Length: 486
Image (tube, rainbow, N blue to C red):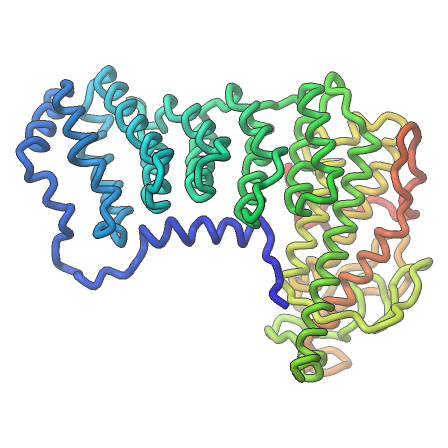
């Protein structure tokens, strides 16, 4: 059974697959000029370039740009060198260093108008739409930074459900570059929120989730403190079990960064949404692994997969044990967690890494490791329980991460306070068990199962009251948190 890849990785790959198709195909004509490279030889373009040297472009020059040059982006013959063509157009005809401020503003506007018109036109090749919006994102102001006039246009395109998803993703990627350059997104907050909370169209899959996740990542820049309406929508999104786990994690991150007393956040519902998303992510990955193993068993490959170890040379020590918990293979590692009733499925190490990131991100949404707001600041009477649950999430994140990336080659870390006694867990390549032992995929699956069992023992957060503290574990030291962020 084919595993569904999640939004941040696979959806981004899906988007890049389109853009890279028009940017990075091999050049089997090395040393030869591409047909489009001769566009500067046309008399109209020569006249345009002469005007550019003088700093101003008249109406005839702008017409040359939109009727002779920009349509080159639509020519299928130019697909394999499209990135070069885009760069040549911007550097030769849209150069901020050559044009005066008024002409640059006018010519940027003409370019953006053409690009947005082509993206919305019926029957336009998706490659054209992607590159047209990437060109809009490439436009520069007189100061050399991304052109501020493009910011609202890109946000509008990203929020337009009528446009192809690939073009919307290109607009969102360009918008992110504007944010990285320090341009304000405050006027685009409503559009970003709408992108985030609107359920993706049927069939959009990972691309729709990527778009929502990217919007949630930019939203705190546009709205540093949530309004009551925005907070309500984010809490609803966080609690929505029909949305992907990664979108819910991003919603928790955004809400934690935007938390403010004036936002009137329903803290109990938000915290329960965090707990639900954490558990759901682990459940889904274990279920997917079991389904995959079952499919392999039907094809006769199950036995071969079941005992396969995951090599790499950086692991050692007794497999099947949870780092820092002193458990035994196939058994829960904490008091109160029942022994496993069936073997854990094999899980790839990349799945562990993703789940570790999710749990750490959810922990930071509640209580950031460094400076930041976090849901704990608006949790009221539930603040103590919220902190305890954040510690639990962060502890499990560190354990999952350490299974794949041991902190040292000769020693592990001591169990966190409250964990089952078992001494240190050492990833020692020359330990008592020999040098050939490596954690298997079943070890990784057991680690996920242990984390799930641990989080399932935590009491839910109830509206109108605080949950009991999540276990008796103390906060993990910041130095033991590989995901800590300011």
